[in-house]
Length: 191
Image (cartoon, rainbow, N blue to C red; front, side):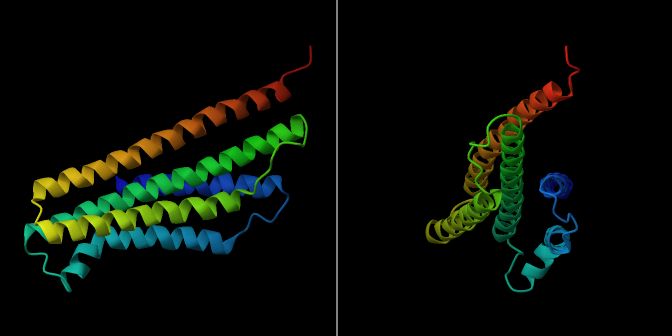
């Protein structure tokens, strides 16, 4: 399920980005971006399929505690990826909305480049994930947390991601409705 959801989000991101490039009249063939998305997805596939086995070569995963920590961290990584992709999609949808508004009304609307926002959003969420997991790991080592405590801490992170995901998804839906209104008014027959 995690890989399917990630694939769906990447597909949405790909087509939103392609739509913006078409609207700008730019070449939509971006092999580096496409290859990057494919490589990122394949990395997640390999990590989810063989990550535990590969890490087990360096760390003793025979005890349930470290194995559970790895599995929860992997799930947290997927949640972070989903929220990050949804945030990037939200930035692109806002960009599309601003372009439609500026075509329809006045061009005085602020047109901040979506790339600047994306450059700020992605490192923020990835940093949040790494700092959170490091803090959990060092807390685990210093205080000897139980597996139940580790699960509770991990579920808190998933809930935090869920709040951000709901905010971004709601923003995409709300902005999408506004885009639909603009397009339907333009497409409506006069009279």
